[in-house]
Length: 157
Image (tube, rainbow, N blue to C red; front, side, top):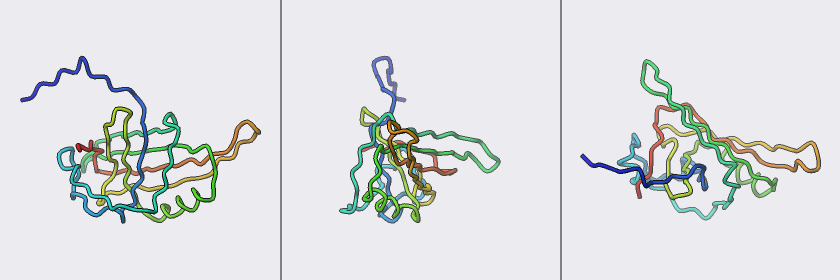
């Protein structure tokens, strides 16, 4: 048995960034993802990616478990906002609408967590929000969500 002293460990809140991965870009994913096999996940390299750094305070990820007769179901909801509306972003995100996705969230201290799997992927949606007043501005709200039996797991690299 290992003993871990947590008195001197500090894990600040919030998320540093998120990665949205279409299922068709997953080369290999264990049938059931666990904390011990999550490092076996292989994602293809792509040149079609779009690097977007959302304001980190806008990233919200929740993973609520609910026990059912058939096991535990996790309601995963990840949302963030981009405070800009661009044609390039609309074209890029439109490709995700018809695809199922996985989501990797990274904390400020480097810890990564994966939501969904190839067997139990998540749904992707986005919409434009237009401010009513001049100072309200415009944004794109992105949401990745699903009810899944796949427990969110840590990636141990």
